[in-house]
Amino acid sequence: LDQHEGEAREELITSYEDGRLTHGPVRTLAAITFGTDSISPFDSLFQVHADSSAFDWKLLAAVAYKESRFDPSVVSSAGASGIMQMMPATAEALGVDTASGVEDHIRAAKAYLAVLDTMWRGSVPSKEQRLKFILASYNAGPGHIKDAQRLAGELGLDIHRWDGSVERALLLLARPRFFTRAAVKNGYCRGYETFWYVRDVVAAFAQFAKDPGR
Image 1 (cartoon, one colour):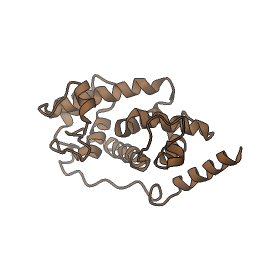
Image 2 (image 1 turned 30 degrees about the horizontal axis):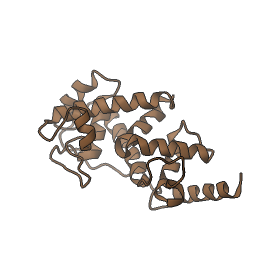
Image 3 (image 1 turned 90 degrees about the vertical axis):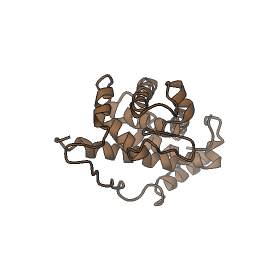
Image 4 (image 1 turned 60 degrees about the vertical axis):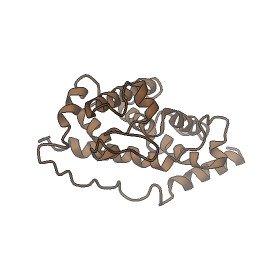
């Protein structure tokens, strides 16, 4: 390991252990108040669209919960809109616009998750790990996640594993000495946001899935 890579490893460890970013338990979810037998007012729509895909409907619900708290009227500061908070260009490519209803947004998000699943299937064989690459790509865009994967490879980490590997490299994409590397094609990324996004959606999915009454 040469001096520059040794310094990079030390900085990676510092990023991963930065208490502002990664320490502490996964943040708890607010109470779901729609009743003991439901997660949201849109459960039937999640179920209908999950029936035609490889994704559990409760995963679609977990993404929607994290993105909008099931509020279809939300518009983010970046321009993402609807219950699934899709960016305008992605939504347009999937046939969704501001006039589209909740069902169209759920259908489009399911289709986009399927596209991302296909994208990562070749390089991330583990279904459990691939889900985290998919969720990270949904949040930050696949370009940034591919950058993090390449950077992880340069740092000697497992490029097929999200946990403790690519998620660690992603945190470095907020630092100029890393996001200016030749392997990084998409520049700066607020990796800590995506780091937590993946953990929060996975935690929500686990919470929704553990209740057999839903």
